[in-house]
Structure formats: C-alpha cells, structure tokens
Image 1 (cartoon, rainbow, N blue to C red):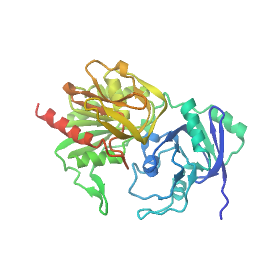
Image 2: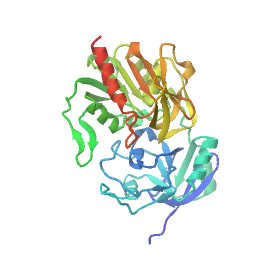
Image 3: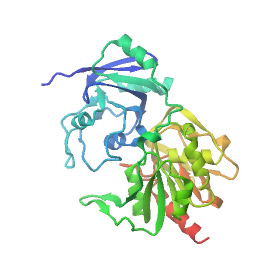
Image 4: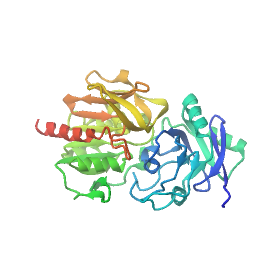
Length: 379
C-alpha cells in the first residue's frame, strides 16, 4: 500500500489542519469555502464561479464514483484547491473513466484529505470565509502562517477576466439523456436568438437555453453593447462567474445599455451585475451559499424550491429601485434570491436553475425567459 504524503491546510487567521495529499504535489492558495452538496463534485470542481477558491466538501466521502468526460461544466477544473474528509481512490460507476485523484493530478489541482471537515466548516461559519493555503511540499507551519496572512481577500477581485471566452462561439448541445448523452442541435436551431455574456458560464446553462428553443451565441465579457445590439438579439443572458461584482463596473456600465431595450435573464453573478446596473448595491456574505439544498421561496406563489447555489456576495434589498420587485428570497437568511421588472422585461435570480446535477425545481425559469422574449417580440 502506497504511503500517504502529509499535507497542511493553513488559514489566514493562523488555524492549521493536518491531512494527506491526494491531488497534485505542490501548494496553492485562495479563499477557503464550503459546499454542502452530497453529489456533483466534478461539476463543482469545473464550475468557473469557483475560480480563486479552495472548496471544502461537507459530505464525508468523496471520489467513490470517479470522474468522466461528460460531467464537465467547463474545459478543466477551476478551483484553486480541494478539501475532503475521506477520499476514495477505488471508484465504482458505469460512467466513470478514471479516479478523482488521478484527474486532479493531471490538471495540477492540489487536494487534501483526512482533516476534520466538520470542524473546518464550523470555523468558517463562525469566523467567515477567509484566505488560506494548502501545501504538500512546505510543511513549515510558521512560514505557512505568514504566507496565509498575505493572501488577498476575495473582495475587490476581478476574476471574470481569467475565465471568460477569448472569442464568440455558437452553442449546439442540449440536455443529457440516459443512454444517449447530450442531444445535438444545429448551431442555428431555435426560434429565439440569445446573446450570452460569458462571465464564467456553466455548460448546463447553455444546454438548457438551447433545449428551451434558443439560438445561443456566447460572447466575451467585454463585448461592447453596441456590437451586441447590432446583432438584433431577442434576449440577453448574463451568466454566473467568480469574484466581486463591485470590481466589475466596466461590465455594469455595458449592461445598463440593455435595460428596457431587450429582454434580460441573469443568473448568480449576472443577477448581481444586473442589479448594480439597475442602481442597487452588493455586499459580501459572511460565508456564502454553496450547495444543492438551499430553500428559496417564490414570493408571488408562496412555493418553496430547493435550489443549487454558489455565491459569496448578495444584492442589498434596501437599495433596489422601486420599479424592481423582489421575486424570491432565501429562507435560511432572508437574503434576496430573485428580481423582476415586467415593464423592462427583466428576469433575474441569484441561485442556479440549471443545477447540474440537481435539484431541478427551478428549471422552469428557462421557459419563462423564452416566454419573456415572446411577449417582447409581440410588443
């Protein structure tokens, strides 16, 4: 049996956890956060919204179903590092192609197992998400503590520039079907033409837009509004992404020119940026919402949806203009989860209705976006 290599996790407040390496041999740094999902670690690892973050899984056993080439939300892992309680090198799943550890090593992602993730999660809940580092090569605790204190916080960081596409591209893949894989469409299939701004967009968002009947052109985050309006789209989609929305005023200014001109659908960071373009402010949450079990209430129907979420910032409800109504709230902490403006054809949510791998309670929002574009087209 191969001997496990020692690894250390050190937080910026000096807290130290000792464990073992199961990923790439080296060190890494970022904001340490936790995710409460039981499944979906591959989708989490490849979500660009986690850029610059070291993700802790609160579920205790990770790796037991391996990884495959289909459950990818981007081309490669996006996290800065990975933390689990117990890692399983031996996987069992008919779709698996390799072990999680092998895949992480291929992509040079540092990972640590064997620490008390319940203790770490409680610490983050009490003290807040904070910078930290994982090292498998430098085990000098005093030196690592000094390094951890110097890691910049997430606030003020523009990480969209690191994950956005370099050039526009058409999307042609629909939702996944058992035994069939992802449905294939022609790039120009679809009744409604949607321009999707890529701030770190997840692939399953694009799949659901396509399956809902949209022709989807993905564009870089800095694409000028005039260039997009010249394309005469039926709708604008504003994607999820990493970092602090307050550091993205250049994107907010761009978005402001779409308001009232064309229907807009925003998710996560896109929701925050749209809200800022409407005049609202954003703030950093103490430890954020990350997981697949977040209860959200639709304020118009009273229905509760279980949602997937991944954000460390939120929109300040008190700063929303009077013309914009709150549509959804988080039942755990009453933070804003959605807005509507019917007169300006705006639909926006903080959570992730694409929810790969689940839950799927909120997938109807993609159909609502299509209906919004249809109403706008009819005048």
